[in-house]
Picture 1 (tube, rainbow, N blue to C red):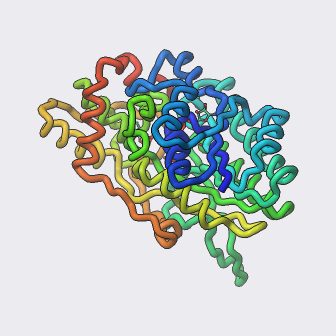
Picture 2 (picture 1 turned 180 degrees about the vertical axis):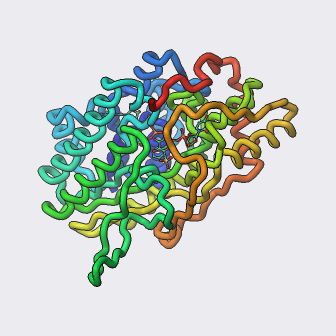
Length: 382
Ligand code: NAD
Ligand code: USQ
């Protein structure tokens, strides 16, 4: 298949591009490299040193003989996107290319506007490009489990059957997102659903949970292929952040009471889920939703598990409950369905002690790169 990986220089996109290339697909990366510029804006960095995109794809070709074409540009520039579609004529468009940090979207008005315009308009351009230039192309769009929020009932995969005043219908599951970033994903989902209905586009929305880990078989092949890992209070996500905190002897930062429960998966499962979606495309006109996660944990559970492994590795780590910078429920019901990807063949890599230990060892190896002032959260929802 000819597959575009938009956002292919990022944390999820880079290992996915390599994995799909290894399976024999003809992969093209599209990325405007804005994430590297945001590192400069925030005076932050990846824990692992990362090569430039050119160095990365050159090394991949040297090691495997497989070429990954790259286009550096912005999905928001339609002339650029049109040219990408004209030159590549994709069978699938994997869309990771969005501003993905909830705290970044909550910094101030400018950052909220940037997040929503970058994400919503970029995605709308992709929908138009598919309609105009590749109507058979399958859109595989990264959504988020956070679109659903934390309702007091089970979370279904995209749709819920509702009975109201004696009538029944299968309706989009209610959305209660927790940041302007998470809201941008809800807006995207609505636009995609509508485009599928009116133009007959085929799309899969992958409502992904929080991703942890860093390596895949492919990124481990050479240091130049290493993936980025975020640890800071803006882009770092719960489990990876806790592990990096333990590596430098920082307290593990549980926000509030720590009963917040979220769905998680290993980066090694992210790449496989995208492959499964690509190999089993949605029908023409179908808007399909898969919940992409393998397990759920409360923040307290994760903090305790990291503390235990850190102790075994000789690191004295404390778990500290700090004032929650977000507005969110800290004690709530959580039970989410995730059977669709499993039914299509996903075999989860679950969170074992060894997985935590492996990530911790990488963090310890690179610990001098962690900028300690970036670790505590600096952005509030208020
Ligand atoms: P990331 O920030 O590491 O990567 C995103 C990439 O997209 C970056 O390389 C960035 O330069 C690029 N990009 C952003 N806007 C662009 C634009 N307008 N045009 C072209 N390129 C653009 O993020 P990630 O962690 O790899 O996340 C990828 C996707 O997966 C996002 O859509 C995110 O919402 C979703 N997701 C991530 C997680 C997670 O835990 N990391 C969990 C669930 C969903
Ligand atoms: N949390 C802590 N301590 C920390 C960091 C986070 O207690 O040091 C808590 C947060 O308050 C929150 C939970 O952990 O309750 C998850 O926070 P997070 O930063 O790991 O994840 P989130 O902001 O939801 O965003 C991340 C990705 C985003 C993706 C989302 C998937 O950045 O791109 O969409 O995970 S989900 O959470 O399923 O919506």
